[in-house]
Length: 153
Image (cartoon, rainbow, N blue to C red; front, side, top):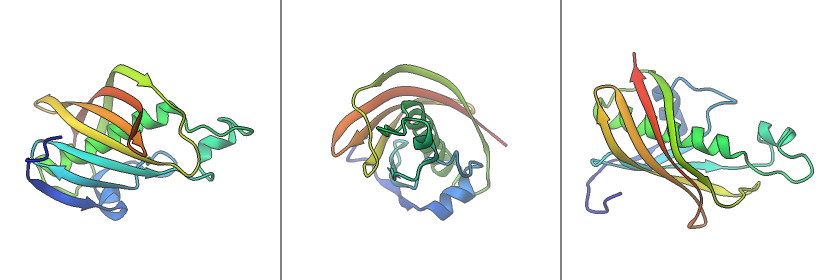
């Protein structure tokens, strides 16, 4: 993210996310997106609670938020950034997750943590977008990946 890049959307709350993405419970994995900038960057926020459905099986005795859920949340954050930045539309769109590269999980995420998905655009071609994401808890990177997605009507 470029601090000097102007902010286009300071806050996209859960109601606006529901109008922007087709995802719903239990697969809507972000609570809000903040600081969407003109350089196609922004930060998705997820408040992880013990009530997450994934904790029923991952792992009941020592709950750890699944890494694959963080990667999906990165893609959802990127989808909100792309849709809001380019079109400013609130029309639900299909967002197809196509690629994951350079994925690394660094630290476990536990109930009570707040994950910040720091996403920045790596480029785009027509309806294809590529983003780099750093998932952070308390300022420390817990996961990172490059993700690619396609936005369609």
